[in-house]
Length: 290
Length: 305
Image (cartoon, rainbow over all chains, first blue to last red; front, side, top):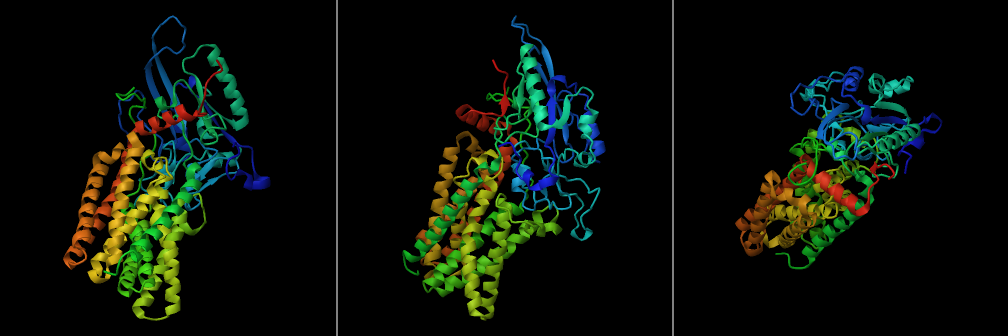
């Protein structure tokens, strides 16, 4: 389950699978990751809105936001000390594309624009994407989106009269930086090591130790999310340590790659197609011409 | 914690709404019409009903030519439409569908042109045969296309959607033929339309019942409006075809038009339902929480007790 689809096709060029371990217990909500990501990847500004939702005016991951820091204010003490004490806690979580082991976006992409890199990550080739938008509702995390801003690079031909970029964008796990032997911009900028980059196996070991420590200290709701290679998407390439259930941070509680059921769907469709032929044949034969 | 018990991040959606625009539900209709018309045309020809065969061939070919234009128009980068044919990819219903549409559209338009020109009969028959094989796939794959997403009301309906779309396609093809063929030749088309409407209605009912809470979007907002319009128009149209369609050309035209309009609304209802389902985080959370409670989940790893 834990080998990403397509990774083994690289042969000698295959690299060790890398990813992120985002430990929200040390996130301070500085948004350095958001800024570093925007700067490094030349992501356009997409408007500034005051939401009134704690310190979060970014709101979501989309075509123009590849790191998003969520802020949750709760009436719940950080550490459960058993004396019934209440208190406030402020949860912060830097969200990102999960680079799934079994990635729905990659599976459903009709052009092959989305592909598995030699590092086991999932990347959109911008010179191939034709903006069909299928990956957008296919992603169980709502990561991908079509960019409706003017194209900054590779603009569409003028004869079509289209002024917007029209392609789908998401986190590349800084594919260009990985190629050059550097860590992704967000991890580099993170001042508290909340965003840790490295070989996935190593990150998982580190996360297990961290969870054990937080549990021993009695932290409320500490749990790893996307760490298990047996989960619905075969484990995340970018997984998390959360301090509450995933839905509290706007994450799906039990994501399953949508193509898991596709073989059954194709079989079912062939039966429906057969029924269509049978039905029309019956309607033709049973009864007269009139 | 929201009023109905699930938690969310400021009520924000967990998954993204589709970015597809009006071309897509319209294509679901035209693609279905094209696919089922190819089958109806061949069935009519094989039983010696040349008039119906010819008209259904033309109707199917027109719908088959309009379909790719709609799809290209929806793309963010229309000039790159041919990237659909860079790969053959069974994990992508859209890729498979593009190939099916290419084959179906190519075959049915070739057959229609040769029929008009009255030339190269063997080629025409071969093209019709190809269109007849591709047609049923074209009429039903769109159900898989929408079901193969993370949108709860689509994904959870993966059993029914290809059947609903197939039945709707049959209804559309039969009804369209009723509008353009004299009632004395249109028996098979009329029966196809009526049976299609009945099957589609029953399947929609079964689907929304089985979906439970997830299916409630079919009673709300735009999806609800289109669903009611679809049911009303398709039912009245089919009743008109059943009672007066044999004798009156006027009734056949009106009934056929109503059924087609109803089936178009059905596609719009399913389309809009997906948006409504994606917008409300509770559908994602409730579906996954109840599945996790039933089957267990490895999405999260809790500390050893």
